Length: 580
Image (cartoon, rainbow, N blue to C red):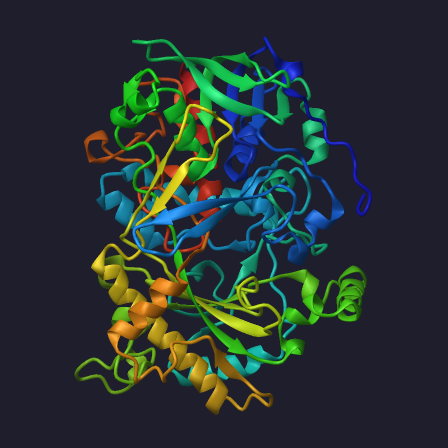
């Protein structure tokens, strides 16, 4: 029991050498944990879950604030871009994957997104088809017993007193306050967000939601979890449509093989999943031949179409007592708030980001930068929502309200709230390519952010609105303390021209770490890698189930959709072998 750590039942690579399993799952992250849990429900089968990292089951990894983008399992990878700005992306090599380091924001996928997938030719991923899977994984929120597998969520009151004043500005700029929106997160307006936090106030990550210690112990015969497992390639024979197993790197630095009787499922994420396929000889021919890798199956789309939510920060410098800098800049306050968390579940340690604004920029009045655009003949501005209903469109901008300076490495000792202005439906894409045959090397990650002119138009509108909101908060909200825009474009929002906005965007744009679509579902000739049953083209027993299969990035935070994909994949696998 917390704060004491128990020994989680895992195996090493050397302990599984030469064994054979019905199902091998590559990647023990958000999706992998869910799939392993569901497939191991059948005691008559044997499932192996492979995770490159460890378990890292320490008490501080469960505290919401100290676990966001932190931990010895946090991995930073450099990225390149077509512009001058270099960046980085974050991922996690540990059981639970990115659900151990993300902002814990749970937002059910939007109906409009899945309606669009249906129109794109994916009827099996329509809203009617996926809704039961969202509902299944949300059962954990209704029942905290380990028998009800799935996520647990909660909301809470913010620690900062700044929110009341910011909400006043939001309301006065025409944005509806959807404070109890429930399933409608991601539609237009200002939202209080659900976080994957359990009733005791701790992070509820994938391994806790789907693979709690008690369950894994009970399933020792049907489920093995192997940590420290670096996958070097799949076991494929030329001209064969079956994957026979997975090669791993043992402690001796030699390749060892684990065999699969039924299926191999890759759930290593949008960066590692295409890397594993490419190392295995599945991918673009030119890339594989460049690295002297035999081409077992040419699929040009492997590693292409990398998508992500891009963020452009607007900083408002305010006193430290209203930001997380209060605990970062003072040992006394850090100790005080840590005690509040332990004793009462309150204070800064309980969460991070739990407020956001969603806008459809088509409904933002550009002349005054307010959230309702008056249609001809309407009596009041409130006749139009900030969410467009035209063809099921979703908001294209999210403004995350983050009570901290998100660029503290560049601007240390600055206490600020960040209005992180994010493109929810970007059109620009990038790519992930291996750089050698060495599985220990990170792939090359290339972004072409703002390559599509439509993205730049949306970004300008979103940035103007965020600056308008910041100025209104400073000048008209009644906030009783000194506040100013820090490191902004330099002039009032209504004085900036497009070039000034573009310069600020290009100098400050960052990843929001919502990487998707590098092995996307779709027709092979259109860049697809998997079919609607998540099978990799050309192979009857190889599937992918993670964010990489999404045709486009979701217009909301993608964690719930990744869980849904995992739940769906488990059912697809079960259905296949029930009929066999």
